[in-house]
Image (cartoon, rainbow, N blue to C red; front, side):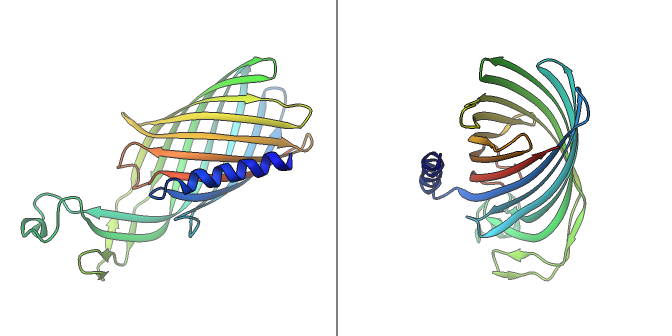
Length: 259
């Protein structure tokens, strides 16, 4: 068991080191799950994420969800999450800008950046189908996700051209975003070890593929109530408009309490 965990950590570290231009972060989460009856269950999750090669906090979040088992192998769920993000909003020079016409800068060069901590509100509804082949489980989850970012005013922004803060207020307007997330996942129970290795691929679609997320890891069931998770994740951003998010390698650690 110790050798397996050590090998997984070494492999993930090697993968992150192989892509110097990508970002690296650590994500940690705590979950609680309550089975209400044979069909209904409720859950709570709190999460912390880092970015910039673990140099900065990326976000804190907390969420609630409710799940209903429609029939064997099919369930529906819905939830809400409050996200508190460390934002870096960057604008870029476009055609027609005075400095572009004077050839002082080029189209696409970074113009100004606003930095602030701000809230987002996220709602989701999911439908998940599962099929078991002995100890192997295959699942497909389709999730509609809506995220709303309220309007926010910053006191000043960093000017890349002048290399100083501009001292001018700027308003970032509120906006909402709909995303369809499609996730295919495989799990295999190693009952004698209490381990459940898993692997998944997830597509974020908003009229075009925004991002692909690949995850491999394992759950470690200590008892009926206590479950630990360890995973490696790679986010491959396909659309540059996805909140200026870079490709990212992640090591995740989670704990779930069932009662």
